[in-house]
Image 1 (cartoon, rainbow, N blue to C red):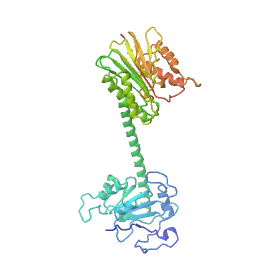
Image 2 (image 1 turned 90 degrees about the vertical axis):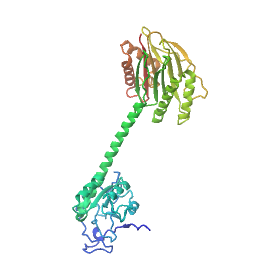
Image 3 (image 1 turned 120 degrees about the vertical axis):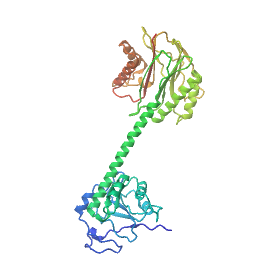
Image 4 (image 1 turned 135 degrees about the vertical axis):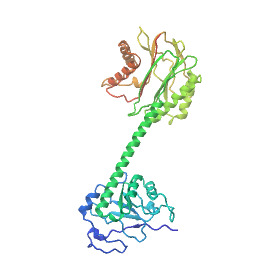
Length: 451
């Protein structure tokens, strides 16, 4: 059976002032309602003209109302309206939901739905849900304002329609141009407000979920049974982010060895942050499986090569494995700055970095030699990313550098700082020297052995 052709309701010339008012019906069967005065309707609808259903501005667009009513005779339910400029308001009429779906375009500002319209697919059947047609329209037009039209005195059904999702309800036999224009304005504005609140709530929820996700991706050190003390400081370079391309981790294996790692994926976006998390998790799994040194770094390079989005992406890495007695350690550097070690009675210094291998992802088949270093009985070992040393010093172009960082840590240790206090003071001083927030990610971890 063919679908009825939708009809665009004609606006009598009397409303534009081109013909005198008439009290008889027009040729289409519409009653010749007397045109309202411009000053009565223009202000009421001025806020809705030029606004789309999602709140965007539409330049000089006539207000459009979609009337959905089952009226084969074509009699008028909606009184005639003029917009702010005195032009006819466009009224589209659909006799069923199939027509309504075809006429529901982005320039429709409001829907006026007759609740007496039969629900889709239920012709001639009793429907326990009196508002099923409204629910269908709300699903069909989630971004449009909807006014429910019901019989006079059926306020309960109208109120239920509002609870279901309509912006307001009107009585069919009490409509006039002023009431309808005001209802349209309020419905559109209410829909815009509801949409804005919903988007704001969704944005807040998404931000909270992202924050929880990013916090969950930060490592929890596995140091149970170790006498070493651990502290860390992490500041992503991305605005309002909790996670950047820097990553670190610390675990203790069953043999008593403490393994520490810190790394940096080039770049500062969410893709780099995700890759950093993948490398950290892979490092932990491989370390707990017994890999270390060159074998571990070679496997991590394979992970990076498979997971990176671009062949130019690389990552620097520093790994340290501290013997169970805590007096010596193995060091591997993959294009990463050497750790700093501080001992009582001695000046802080950098660990050897002569055998520094290339960053991961740069050279296929690269090797990363493991160096043995002596730590002694009491020490503090600080691993860091280049965000800590590449900040500017003052207004010039000079960078803090590794030498400047060593001097800074020496002063802070002499002032009695240690652990979390030391790292907090170091990051804060680097920011102050830079003259503001650092643009690069910063990760610093500190391991202390105190007999």
